[in-house]
Amino acid sequence: MKTPTSCPAVPDCPGTGPFLGATFVTLPEVPRAPTVPPKPRGTGEGHPGPSGGGSLRHGPSTPLSHAGLAREKRLADVPEKYRTMYRRAWAGSSRKAAVRAFCLECVGHSETEVRLCTAPACPLYEFRERG
Image 1: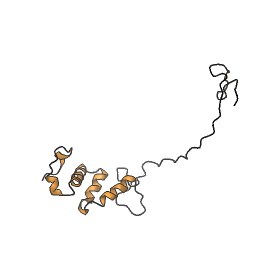
Image 2: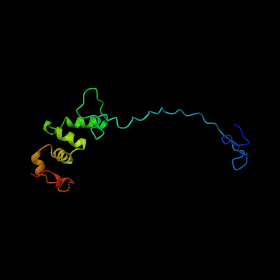
Image 3: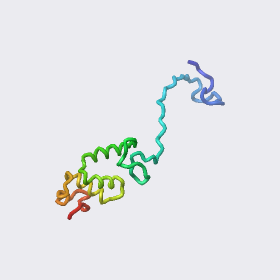
Image 4: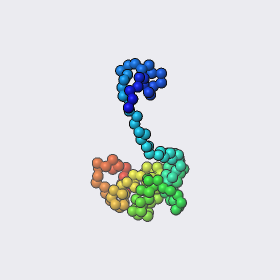
């Protein structure tokens, strides 16, 4: 270790001040993790939204996003007659479909149970199908 007469890191340092005579230690370089460039936005991978990207009806070569995979997994548990409604709800094209899908899922996909719902504390209670 050296005791410099001026600051090694600051060019044109006059060598005066509170750090005069301080001991400087050179630390080894710390290896950094390689950075991965972010994906460009708007690629539409598995996103059925307004960007016109992928769709939930995909072929074997279309990659799905995390949300797309979760939706496909959930769709497998939904009765066939409600799957189109779920897709409309996920696409954001129908609020009515979103409320209906939520209510049906809450009561185990029984339309009768949605009409007989007794959960007035639910925020969607007033929007459920009643008739």
